[in-house]
Image 1: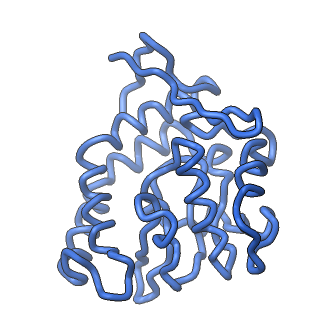
Image 2: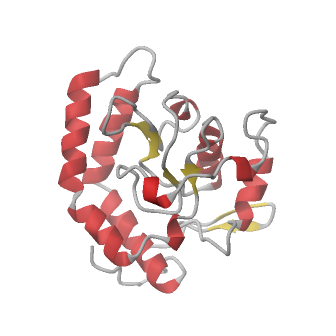
Length: 208
């Protein structure tokens, strides 16, 4: 299977499909964050990413970004409707990421949604915690995720509640992604975790 790395640039910074992590900070995130309109709630990048790995929402797809103890204001989908969803194991429906950003535009949308969280419960250090075995374990437990999505679809309806920014459509999108596309993305991510770079042409992707 031929898979070419998706790459884009902003201010000379290359965006890797796995959103490569270097040290503590993704060097290109600063440029994307700086391109967003001024915002009083989270004016600086370090004010956004204060989530803890041990508090992450299990519904997050593996990757560098994830939601931990995020708020339940349901505003993330206003800017990132194909990436952010809401859900928890209690009545407190916190925000989580169901699709990792792959382009500069998607990254900008995701960052815009994340900085609206008054609890600063998002994080971008997933690459420092995920391992190939953990990614595979998450995938093998996907029936749990499917059951949750189906149950929420029944509770909220196919179109979602009037005030939830069409969260029902987001659930449907997540389920579709789970059935088609996510497996290949996770195999690419495992290759990144194993080698430090994404797959290139003629690479054989690792098993999931």
